[in-house]
View 1 (tube, rainbow, N blue to C red):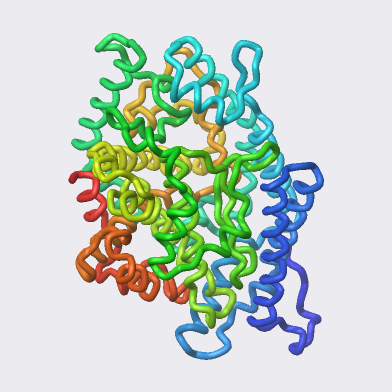
View 2: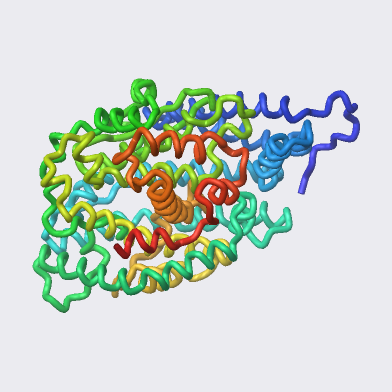
Length: 532
Ligand SMILES: [Zn+2]
C-alpha cells in the first residue's frame, strides 16, 4: 500500500492528539450537516455534498500522520483511552487514496440504487410504505407474491456492484494483515469474533423451543388471516414485511386500535423529562413528519458532540412508530447525558451496541403498561392487555432469528464474495428463521438488504443491544426495584445516566457493562425476557 512520505517533516510539524481531535471534530460536524441536508431533501446537489464530506473524513482518517497522533498526552487511564479510540478509528482506514475513492463512490452508487428502486405491480410503482401496506393488509395471494418478488428485485440490480464493493473492502483489509473486511471491522470495534459467535450459538440453542412454538403460532394465525389450508407452507410473501423481521400482532391488538389518540412525541417527552432528560430542544431541531423527497427511515444524529442532537422520523399513528419515537429519543438522551468534560474522542457512546441497548430499552416502553398508562394516557384495560407483552416477546424472538441470518450471511459474504450467495442466503433463512425458500428462485434476493451496502458489519449490534437491554432491565430491577424505567422514572433515570451514559467512550464497552451491571454481557436475562 501507498503511504505519504513524512520523513522530511520536522518534529514541530508532527500533529498532536488534541490537534487531530480538533480537525476531526470540524470534519465530522460538516459531514453530519451534509448528511442531514441530504436525508431531509434528497437531490443531486445534497448527495454530492454528502459524498464529498464523507470522502474528506475518510481521507483524513487514512492519513498516516493522523494515525501517528494516537499517543497519550498523559499517563492517565482517560488519556490512554483517548489515544486508543483514535487508533481504533484510524487502524482500518489506512488505505490508498484511490481505493477510498472507489469504495465511497460505489457506496454512494448503491445507496442511490436502493433509494430510487421501486417495486411494481400491475403497472404501478410502489414505494417502501406501499409494499409494507400490501404485505400487512392484502389477502390477494398472487398480489402478495408478485409485490414481494418485485421488492426483492432490487437485489438483482445491485448484486454485481455489491460484490465488487465487498472485494474492494477486502483488498483494503488484507493489505493491513486481516483475514477480510469482516474480521477487521469486528476487531476495530473491540468485538471478539469467537465470543460473538459463541453468544449467538448459545442463544440459538436456548431459544429454539420457544421460537419453534412461536413460529407455529404465527403460521396458524397467518394461514387463517390469508385463507390458506391448515397444512400450507408459510412462504416469505405470507409474512407482514419483506424480510420476515417484523412481528405480526398477537391475536386482536387493542392498542393498535386506539393508537391514533396517543400523542407519541408528547408522551415520550413527559417520560424522558421524568427520567431527568429534557428532549424539547431535540424535538425542536428534528424533522419528524413524513414528506416527499425525505429519507423514509428514522435515525438520531448528534451533529457536533456538543449538544446539537436531532432525530429524523416519519411519524404516523401506529404502535411501531410510537416504539420508534421512544427508540430514537432514547439514542438522543444517551448523547445528552454524556459527561460534558470528556475530550471529543470520548464524548460518544461506549459502543454501537450500548447506544442500541439504551434505544431498545426505551423503545420497549411502546408495549409497556406502565408507560402506556402513566405517560400515553391509554385506558388501563388496553395498557394492561396481554397482547402487548405477547407482541413485544414475539418481536424479540423474530429479531433474534433474523439477526442470526444477517450476521452469519455477512461473514460468509466477506469470506467468499464470488460464491453462490443465493444458496448461502436461503440456507440460513431456512435454518434460523424457519422460512422455506421459494421453488421459483429470486436471483440476488440476498443483496436486497441495504445494510450490506451502506452499514457493513453492523447488524449483530441490534441483537447485542437487545441482549444488553434485558440485562439492564434486570439490573435496575435488582438495585431500584423496577425493570421498567416508566415505573420508577425518578430513580431509574439518574441510575442509568450515572452508570451507563455519562462515562461515554472512556471505558471499553465490556468494562462498562461489567462495571455498571456487575456481570459481563451474557444471554441469560434476554432468554428470561422471551421465555417469560
Ligand atoms: Zn437504533
